[in-house]
Length: 383
Image (cartoon, rainbow, N blue to C red; front, top):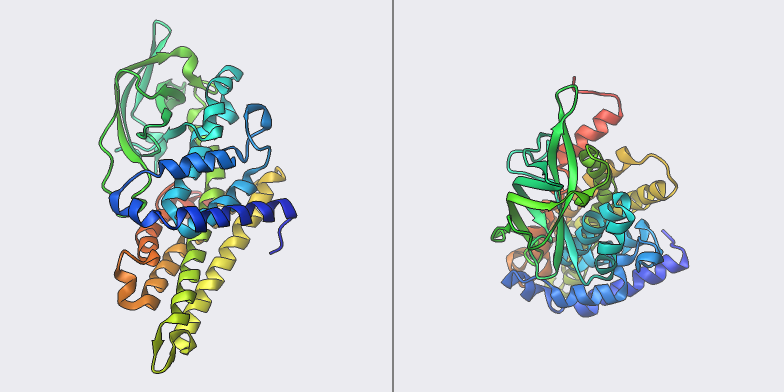
């Protein structure tokens, strides 16, 4: 799959960065559950957080496909670093760029786009996971302020030393038909009543930042409403459609990383007098892994181009996210098998991919949600 020169140059630059800067330190970051502050700073200086944003806000003036290429190369080496960038751009800065007022953009975007600060996306709740329309967090207007009460969970980039804000969805009223009016509100870090609870002890993505959040009479100015009142849920769904392309790219990188590690090991490890890759059972297993990575890459390339062309892509993004996340998980399992006992040791990258890849089938819409979306786009309503 040949890329235009500027895309190919970006991909090569990020690949070198991932190999030379990320790879040597991520095992220790994973072991200690440490957020990669130095890597984030360097990615900011490289302009990776600003790839899909216009130059007027400090961005690179590129596009979402460029971001996806960067995510693939980072995901090839480490998913924690990749998801930090993905969430920082797709879920943190992008809602402000898409739906914010000019004042909000001028206030928040320069630092987010430069990677000096990051932001979280507060959608999921303890009682409203895949069915985000059941949001229970509330926000009422009182003396020109939103008073927010509720809780969010599994929120990425929400509790670091450089987190500047979290965008939360909250019920702000009731529609004439009795359904909830859900709006999005910007809550700056450190706002009284906004508590970032202790970080989760996760199976994977252990160098990324993930927290539950609590809001108790948390007050922010009325002007912190993001987008039109009552459009918060719909706007966030459109953000998730875009984000599924990014997650597909990240998953493709993870799938390819498992191939690369397996090829390297299969050439070095010898049994019965020859490299294990020369044994058909191992060679065929790795060949199938390569086919999965290739297919995943083709998928997200295709969907990204649909999006950039302004064509409908909801179903396509769901398909890409579904199949790419499955490819990452399948490749991680097979790579562990190729490595044998060593694949079960955390010192090997495939062990980290094995732990990390499962959440790709859960985050930003479970596989079941993707199937539901695909069925709905086919006209197979569940009513």
